[in-house]
Amino acid sequence: MEDLQSSEATAGRRSEGKKMVISHAKSLRKPSGGRFKVFRKKRQYETGSLPTLPRPGATKLNVLRTMGGNIKVKPLSIEFANIIDPKTKKAFKAKIQIVTDNPANRFFVRRNILTKGAIIQTEKGKARITSRPGQDGIVNAVLI
Image (cartoon, helix red, strand yellow):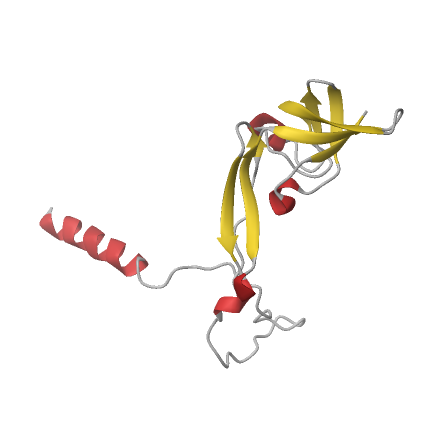
């Protein structure tokens, strides 16, 4: 029993060493399937991040510092959408209620995730999202 516990403890410690990172570096594989020779380690400027999956709700923004001291805004949830009515050519702000359809991924409807092209139910009716909420930190939509 003690041997089992000690092996589990060391196995846990082993995985804490190097962390997997999302990298945008050049592929290590050739088109033929062979491998390129690795000539250096991963660099911080090659790292990426997990996608932000914003949902309707009280607005919560995650502000990140990027290269050059710039700021990137990643929304965790968004409450309002800027909506344009194509008939009257007027823009207004409306509260997002739920996601009713999403051509990108049908499971995003169940999870209520806002993406470009998703159909949302608002106070003023249904609208299609035209912006990229996870990247822009804002929802722009057109009434349908």
